[in-house]
Length: 361
Length: 127
Image (cartoon, rainbow over all chains, first blue to last red; front, side, top):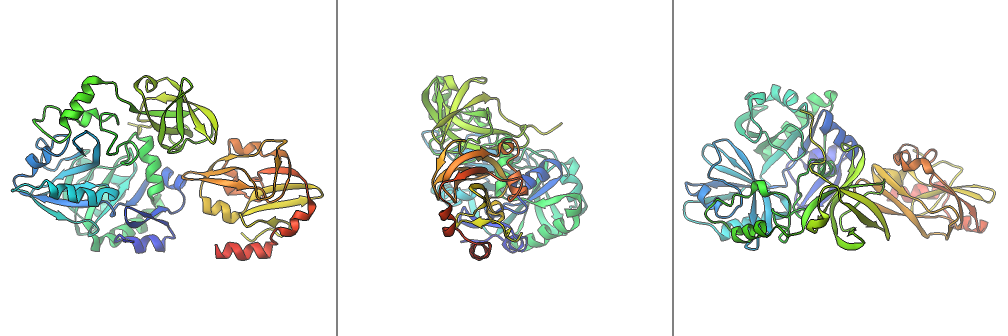
């Protein structure tokens, strides 16, 4: 089992550790609901160093990446970050990722569970003019997320954080250590992702907590992260996106740039958009207190229509139970009543618009 | 939290309080701590006949569904309806407010197979 540079910190904090993406990672510290509350109202700290990090260099990167992904890489401005998806020829997703355009290189962050698959994919399609470096497990990634993120991080960063635009990054120093800061995140709150060399991560992590715990900064694990992203309507690879579930089915049409001349999966995705008859990911709210969970069958008009892909109690959605499911087009309309079968009994649910939660303006 | 002395325990981390031929059942502090934040409890129906060690419901945390077993056999006479809107009571007060269900015992002799507070303390320390 691999360990991130912050493993010792998690052990010292008595975190509950679980295997995830080949690393031993904290699923919770003080408790999922407490950590969730911290992120929504103050700030939380996440160790994301298990995620794959690749450095892309060379003049050919943007054109090369544009042929492998659905969103536009070539139009990214300097210091911009952009969500993107690598697809297979049938339009299914290999992974959802974020590209970061730095002055002399690009950073590509991929899901931990797909790090090996994506490294192989990038190398299988390598072209002259592109050089790849795998920094998985060596570069650390710490995210601070929550309304107090700017306030808590600013004293320790040498760039003006409030001037950083959403989905842009800066080269900076955090506690004097060289870092890339990006105003990105996966929680639906304001916040920053801090890319540093693994050697400097423990100091940054422990100093942030030491100085800001009194103001409510808390370490947060994968359990809280999953509730936060689900409420914010963000897909999780393996659930709302898979090698079989396409970005179009997952409601990510906004990330699909069909005006790009060519990319893997383009024809399949264009045809899917044209036909508009495909099953799609729908947001559900349960009518009662029983949570919907991954794998539970969903019924529409009495007939089996699909399965729950993700489900959780949602403290930020009136403490209701929310879920996603892949449903046929006619079942996936907002306002539709469906049923979720839980241990043999069918429970009512309603299809709703996503995101389930939006942070206050 | 030390194990309350007036209760008996099962290997599945339930407790039972015996009062004549009535039993009150809940899960232990060890169990609620292992589960994490409890968000939903599915209890047996009043009137249900349950058998010792049988699966009678579930206790759900944010991330997982855990089977609930009964440490003794009997007929369910009452369930803790307050948990419907406050499942967290099981975390806060597993031996008091967080009680799960009561039953009329079928066989008083079953308690001989349950664990004393000291014996339960041992197995939960190892767990």
